[in-house]
Amino acid sequence: MKKHKGTHTREKHYHCSQCGKRFRHSWYLKLHEKTHTGEKPFKCSQCDKSYIRLGHLKDHERTHTGEHSYYCKQCGKGFGHIGYLKVHERTHTGEKPYECAQCQNKFFTLENLNQHQKTHLLERPVNCSHCGKEFKCSKYLKKHKIIKHMSEKSYKCCQCGNKFSLSRDLKIHERTHTGEKIYKCSQCGNEYFSSKVLKAHERTHSVEKTYHCSPCGRSFMLLSLLKKHERTHTGEKPYQCSECEKRYTRLDHLKQHVTRTHERKHMYFT
Image (cartoon, rainbow, N blue to C red):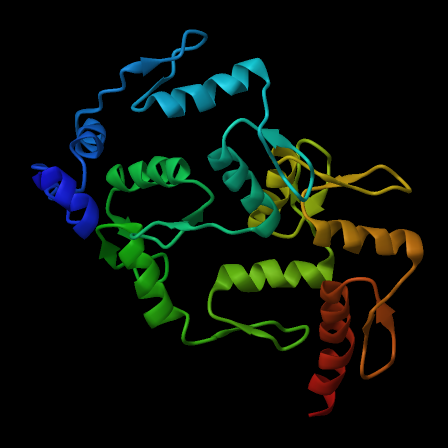
């Protein structure tokens, strides 16, 4: 009778002794308790994966049979489980819903976040490269740099006058004037000014590319990147300089032009 009344009042009579979470049904509680014990009784006969729930195992088994019930509206790729589809859709939207509480890095999946959080457990004390102060983890060092060092821009570019908070940022910026690109992609040979930009580029090799250029067949992981590339075929230059009316296919090329040409000119006459 008590259990039946709960279906009307939506009361949660069953609570987990480990974490206090409450449930309306005892079988929900039993499923939940397995997350604490690590018990996964439903094993896949084709590989070594195991699951807490039978439904999750059946969804997984579709990855072996090739059966797809869920399809991406953007690229048409099929998946055996709606959860896999939702994770895949984030590669189109760029959404990263899982955030690390220690360093604020964001991730596409909870599994990736959990893997990342292990790196914090292994962290040793770190020192500030600017003042030598020691911190017990990189999270506090990062905050220190923002408050103490990044508020002041004491590093100035002698070519265009731009100022930077960190000497390394100035060095990276100076390469835009010299054209020096010291970071090279091992897969395609593209070269970049900074390691950060190279790492972002290298991810494009590992992520599925679903947008294809019809004139040349080149593939891209984001629609916005495909549109940028297509301008090299059409000759479209949507970004115009307000000072000399020169036009560019990309916004970063326009900014580079303004920095090199006009900001330097103003620096000499002010």
